[in-house]
Amino acid sequence: MAGFPAVSTARKLTKNTDVLVLALAADDGKDTLLGLPPEVGQDFEAALGRPLLSVAKDLGATPKLDTVVLLPAPGKLQVAVTGIGDLEDSEPHDFRVRQGFGAAGRKLLALPSKRPLRVMLGCADFPDTATCLVAAQGLALGAYEYRGQHPGLESVRLIVPQFPEWAAQRGEIIMSDVRATWLARDWVNTPANALYPESFAENIAAHAKASDVDFEIWDERRLAEEGFGGILSVGQGSARPPRLVRLTWEPEGWTAEAGHIAFVGKGITFDSGGLDLKPPDAMYTMKYDMAGAAAVMAAVLALADLGVSVKVSGWAALAENMPSGTAAHPSDVITLYGGTTVESASTDAEGRLVLADAITRAAEDEPGFIVDLATLTGACKVALGERTAGLFSNFPPVADLIIEAAGAVGEQVWELPIPGYLGEKLKSKIADYKSSGGRFGGALNAAYFLGEFADDRPWAHLDIAGPAFCHDEPYGFVPAGGTGFGTRILIEFALYIEEIINGVDDDGADGPEWS
Image 1 (tube, rainbow, N blue to C red):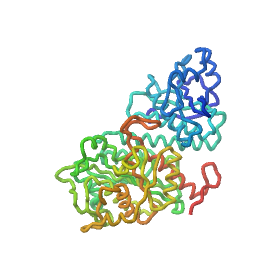
Image 2: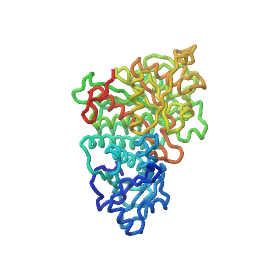
Image 3: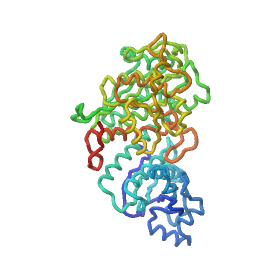
Image 4: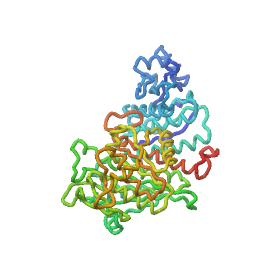
């Protein structure tokens, strides 16, 4: 992947370094510069007559997150100082470090350079090796640029006194997370005239071939033959027909006892709203309505590259929702895959229809867990804002693991309920269900609807309508545009399931128990 850095460690600063990144933290009321190599501090003081920290603060450096200052450096070395907050703050330390170094990664892309940059991170004063890895991950996440002009980063090296074996293994995982997130961002950022159901399916297949992952594509003819009425209904107004894609990673010698996880992603490559047309302002960024499918596909590819012992299948339900003379109407009755009928309350409630088809089909393969990811409702965005996903589940242990996974990778989710009374709101007089239960509680209604197709299996739904796309200014490790949100949550969740099934964690100790 162009511009993606190689990550390694070193005991001291190397001469060929272009940029040294240091963290500035508040500690007991004082500003503290972490990880400053003594020789760099001495060179600064000799050249400028003042300590590096003093110069940085005069130029605007503070411990505040998203504050990054580039210092005039003696010689060829550039120094970046990034804020990581207050060490006594109640917010998790890893979260602040990832955000702070992510902001530094974004800042480095503003440096003029004709070749990729060689970067080192001052980590010697960090509390543990794991925090150093989080810093590297944050920097790499922040250094993403969609088809930009900057050559990117050649390498990221961590200055640490020692690097245990488990850390090397964990480092491989977190950088695989970053690669997958970059891939998901690329897909989300690609304009809808270049990424539509057929081209998206072909691109996924190309990546699958490169990763030795099995893939299967349902075209419009096969979708019709097998009765995928939800996907076909949503896509029938477009000149570009829908697709269903399945990726399957099955480790050598896999048996059912080793576990099987199914991920399902909403892949509306452009959502006009159909005949229930969206307002123009709301339509402009609707190329991102396939972010769930992008995250799912990227996560499966990463888990295959990591060689996890769990079987993982990923489903992408792809359609373009357009108004035309062939478009579906509000009030149509649609027969979904498996025979369930649905009265369409709105053609702009299309995501749940394609997901219902895909979840039903995924359940036929008898996975132990189903997790779907979708930019599903504006209601969830209203409730939780633009940085937090809504989490719904029929099985509390699965919800707990997803919350834990989200915390581990620095993404925010909030669990919401699925009240039983919503079933009454989704009743139809002319079909098995109505696709929407009305204006209020829209995210909850949609989750209840999807849960009906999980075949009573442990299931979770992540509504990522808010955090999947950054409409405003970038922050921390999050760039403008596609964020790749959820990709790393799915990867971490699968690794947790692997640990539980195998009974060991990544450093060989007894793993978590869960019955």
